[in-house]
Image (spheres, one colour):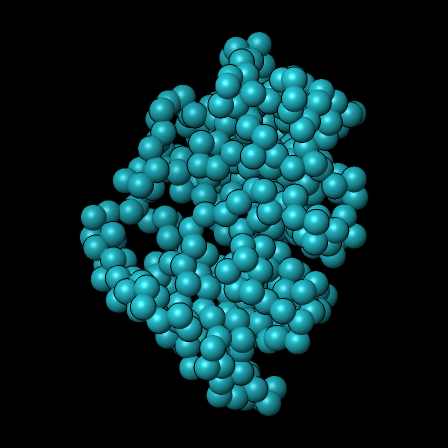
Length: 343
């Protein structure tokens, strides 16, 4: 048996309860049994738990929410790249299951845990860094000497994107709230207030077509409209969210989907026929990117490092962690300690 934080129906954080349930059994599809040392609460977890995404993401109850994990391989089949005792981290999105003492995963959902990261840092790295790497490198194609603007630069994905862009040799600007300007400055990012973006850029001597790449980690078509004139002729606007601001914070409806399609279809049609298109949308990521030698080296050197919320939570407090996440006032990634940290 093991402890797991479960919900049995969509609803408020109070629906989460910690129970004793059978330990999962490895299968052909998910052959690795991992003892979870830490997991996280992502905004996506809250959006799924509330039922806001049930039109597009289905779950079979009970569900143990938590898509990031850092832990120790407990069991592995012969011929696997991992063996019992190996330290790993990764992500199980969209199926979740990491809010428990054990989870079964596939090889593709894992990467070796960097020795430079503790369990909390590793759990907080997987989703945000893999998402950011895809936007900045795989799709954005950032190269040394380019100018990059990140919207939502103080969030989990945004901060990772800034660090990856800087590690790639880019000059980085980022939009954020007033309270996060000092944090971005500490990263080496030039902070900007979205509400006064044009005037702040003008004051900094930046005008007209300037940025090679804009990464949107917030969502909202106003970001796209504002940023488009700032791109150089062959620049890219890459969105990890789409045209809906903080998509999923409110229930996704048929109306939401139709509005989104009206916005996206013309852009996607242009993308199909115009090789130098500016708009790129992606809503998924590849955990395998954590095994990319370049990215793994940056993480090991702590050049790409998550910002952690200082408030500690354990598995029995997962409901409280969801509540905090929904206030949008956390100071970084919210981490849940699951194991005893002795491995």
